[in-house]
Image (tube, rainbow, N blue to C red; front, top):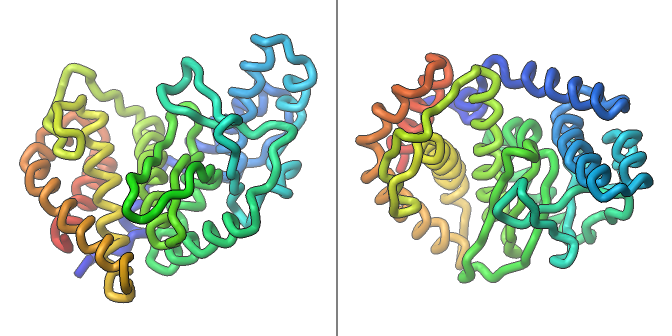
Length: 296
C-alpha cells in the first residue's frame, strides 16, 4: 500500500512560478494578454510556435491571430480547465521542432466530437478520484486525441518539450486506459518543468540501460522513464480492484510487465539521480520510484 498520496509525490516548489514566468515572457514577446494559469502556459507555447511558423511563411493573418489570442478566446475548445482536440491526421504537422507529428491550435480549430469530450472527461474524473487531478490540470491542460485503437493494438503517446502542457495520445473506448496515458505524458511534462524550475542540467554523455527501450539512454531519458512509469503504476494499482473484463486483463498484464522493467532499472537509479543537482527533485523522483516498486 502506498504511504504517500499522488498529490504529495508530485508536489514540488518552484514549478508553478516557472510556468508563470515563462508565460509572462511569451505574452511580452507576442504582445497579448495571457493569464497565469496552467492552461495559459500551454496555450502560450502553441501561440509562440504558431507565430514563428506564420512569420516564416509570411502569413500575416495567422501571425496577427497568434499575437492577439488568449485562452479566453478558446473556450469553445475547452471543458473546464482542459482544451480537448481531435484533429484529423492531415492536420498534423512535422517540422524541426519534433521528430513526431504534432498539432498547434489555430483559428480554424474545431471542438472535439462530443463522444471524445465525454471520454476525456470520464478519464479525468478517474484520474482525479485517485489523486492525479492536479497533475493533469497543471501538466496536461491541452489534450490532443489522435487515433482510435482497439485494446489489443499498440497505443502511442508523447509530449514535446517545445509544447509543455500538451499531451498527444492514441486512445481506446476505455477511459481508464486513457487516464493511464494522460498521467504518463503529464509526468513527462512535469519533469521537464521541474528540471527547468530547479536549473538542473543533465549531461548527455552519462547513459544507463533502459529496459523500456532495450538500449542505453542518456540520464535524461532514463530518469524520465523511471518517473513517468512509476506514476502510472501507482494509478493502475488503485483502479485495478474495480476493473473488469478485458480491461482487468490488460491492466494486470501491464503491471506485471512494469514490475519486470523496474527490476532491471532500479539498481541504476541511485547513480542516475546523482546527476540531479537539486536535492528536492532528486528526493521526489527517488521517493516516487520507491512507492511504485513497493506496490508493484
